[in-house]
Amino acid sequence: MSGDSGGANGGSGERPLLVTLLDYSQQVVYFGVTLILLVAIGMLFVSVGASLLAVFEVDPLQTTLAILDRVLLITIFVELLITIEVIVRERQIVAEPFVLIGLVAVVRRILLVTAEAGQSVDDPEKFLNLVTELGVLTALVISLAAALYVARRTQRRQEEAS
Image (cartoon, rainbow, N blue to C red; front, side, top):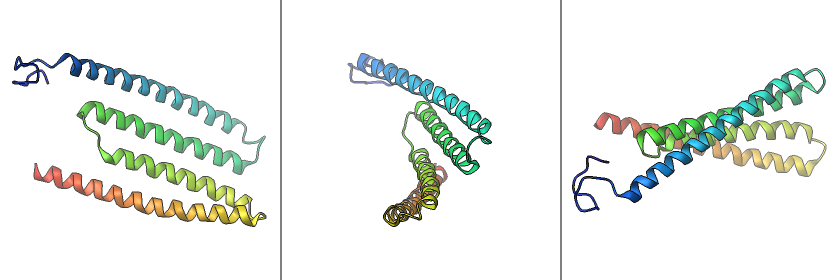
């Protein structure tokens, strides 16, 4: 930071040019990623609206699954935006948002696999593969939930200690 004394540039108290350039570059990248995520979220909202309008032309179950898939994807993107905000504001990477993103992504996949399994009961090999995938995804949910618990508990202990 600019108030540091005895820095790597001879103790003048100013940040080295490379550190300043990297900081600005990082900010530009985060800004670009944020804009892309916001555009993607807007496109997903439009897609959800179009799916809602087409509910009477297509199978209602398929429409519901498509909408749920898109809403969960919007949730993932919003969590990514929150993660970027935390990284920019606190200048550190925190594990909790990443674990939440992973948890939402796995739940999203579980819902899609469940719907797909219901439609592939006639094909025993495909059905077995989907059931196996559900088992792996369930183990992943349990692991991510445990990681989230540990991350939150660790964060609380650090806050209490300070």
